[in-house]
Amino acid sequence: MMLGLVLLALLVAAFGLAFALVLDFAKPAMPWKRRALIAALGAGFIPSLPAFFAIGSELGAGKEGVIALSAIFVLALFLSLVIGFPVAYSVTRQSESRHNPPVRPDVFE
Image (cartoon, rainbow, N blue to C red; front, side, top):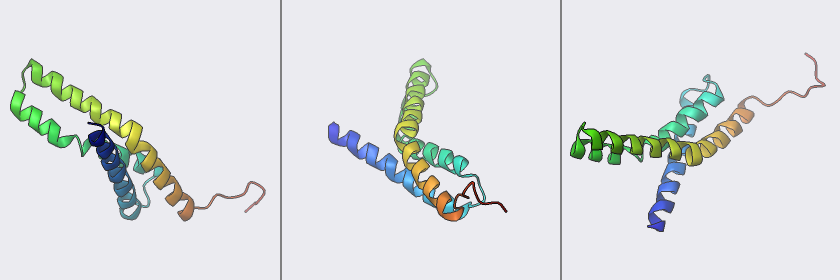
């Protein structure tokens, strides 16, 4: 059980890293905060999709199905917030500082 949770956390972190790097190369003009948010949401939702489809096809649109699907949706948001966002934030922040170095306040243009 514990190994599965650790592997899930590593998978979400890997997806967050991958999505952040892909968005950095594909959309460099997009603001870095938006890139971090999109990468984090993708990192949380991709590992949850198999469970989402399995529960959706098994239980359908009944009362139990809606409750189970909403639980998977909340799990995906939780994974995005707790694991995906810090990884994506750090990667996009570092890439942004490499592309646009900060200007010292004592330098006038």
